[in-house]
Length: 264
Image (cartoon, rainbow, N blue to C red):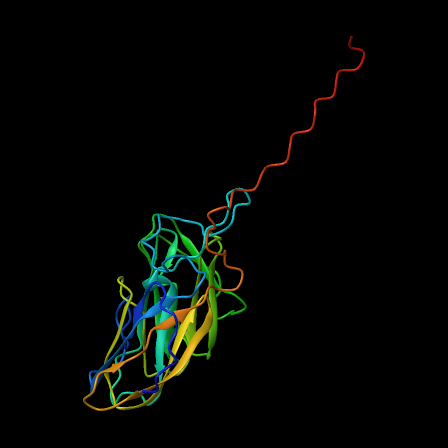
């Protein structure tokens, strides 16, 4: 494997690799030769850590115009997905992925699937959701009641943004592309892709609907592959890390009262 240049040590975050049958922390691919492991790091100037505990139910990551914005954090199994692009395994698991609608959020909210994969959206909330693909008519608005599921099969190679007409802050991303192995980090941020056949691969990382990292990975038969730590940059428009001198915006002063006409 080609080593990447040394980087300053920053708070360690998240990640490892995996292969397919997919639920958070799972992988697709079939046992073969070796494991591929790795980790992510926070970029300089980002929040003190990218790892955040599971957010409260129906938490909105939107600036409300009153409170000072907080630095963006990352929930690894929800927000990050990764894939190895290269020679496919001799056998592959059936391409089926489950995404849960829970606490007003998609879990995971980022996934990578190969063309022809069936994605099952399972509604675990107590209210209906109405998911749709932005500029993607193949996933049109359709209500999914509590404890019900919606199934779609994806064939177009592209990144699909998923939104919800009934929960406007909800969003997710599905990258449909030919890959050999793909998955999401476990809750502790570790990345482990098991049973990877020997060969030359490209590791790709999906975050906020964009490929934010690519690097070559050489897998040698009988030798575990360890990927140098990967730096995750804040997405465009993300709030900077909180400053010790920052304060909430001051509301405008109220206008002075107008004296009543004819008063003494």
